[in-house]
Length: 297
Image (cartoon, rainbow, N blue to C red; front, side, top):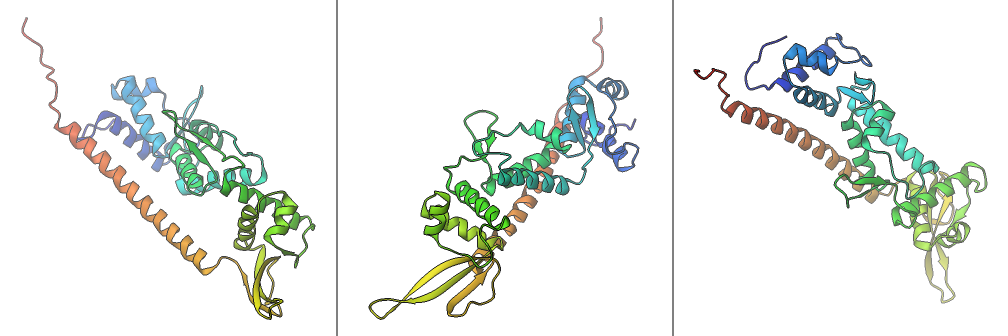
């Protein structure tokens, strides 16, 4: 066992030693970490100190706890991959209806066990889905629960309508070239026009529709602009003022800004975490050490 160096506390030494063993493949992915009693004996540490070291490993993505079995080296040390897997799978379940509107998600600990992933990856995935409005958080309690938004939520309502349209396209009910208006979609799905409009916008953004604007003569001899969304990726349509497939330039610029802000936020959070650890270490080093000398009898 290595000796204390600098301001590191015992729980930090335990966590650092175990991290190094994982790096060296002395402890492999999926392998059971030493038990609490083993670590207490090896480091002459209290159970609370060992538990704190295990928390550091779990929160950092190095280990995963399985109730009744112990703590294991994470199978997904690559946090980015774990985060993408969790967020993509939960979004898929919402899209397909496996997670219906209003459903309460399992706890973050249960999700970590389910996906064999660290809590940090679960938290990041939940934050992404909340930011993207696939999930919502009930902040009334000390540990807020996470839910799939209800069907009356405008964003969720439009996404559900889009999924229904996508299914009709996939099964051939709406063949390529079918022109859809807000009113037609609203009647077809039994929804309001605003929700239908958003669903059609999603159809274009997702590459399943083409926005067409054409001029229609009026009785007064003028021209009014009529807009429809045609199923499929279509070439320019004769007589149309404009055809457009995919996100609009405004939507692309907004998406790029959001992606940039997400990167900036991730970097900032990482720096904050590093600063917090350093401050804790410096504060611990500054505390006066307790004297171990015995009082004269």
